[in-house]
Length: 179
Image (tube, rainbow, N blue to C red; front, side, top):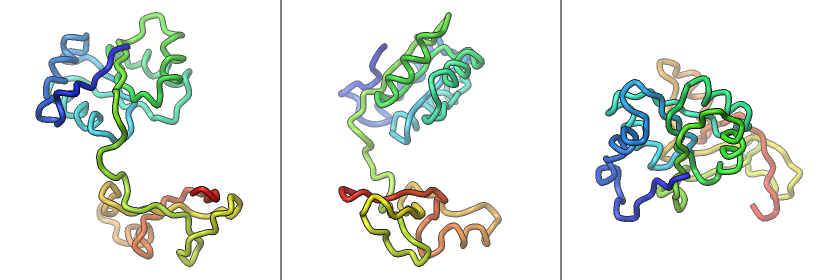
């Protein structure tokens, strides 16, 4: 497995060679390049590189297990898979069962360079933080620069989703004593 990060290239503009890199490694025009990345700069770069080179970008849900990933890679006939190091174990298991695995390229990152959210809380119905006791379960809410602005042409749903100035995810969680 190869690494994608070049310490000499710090911005998307400087690393615009990703399109050529994909061409040289079997994902040319019309071919499928798969990615299994969180919202990190390399994900943005891969979106532009795919379009620029006339490729199909196949994004893989980061919550899938190895058999589901293997199925998707085989079905898409992916030539290249770019993935984050946090998925190394599941990606390795998926590739191990393939007859013709794609070239696997690990993104060597040092965490997200911008805050994914300004704030994240677990709150009750009155939007008060739940106790950090590991037992009290309620809704996860977030706000920040990567949270959507609202639902297209649906002000009612937007108002409901952003009640109290927080985006209500609908997910449930507890807060442990350590956060």
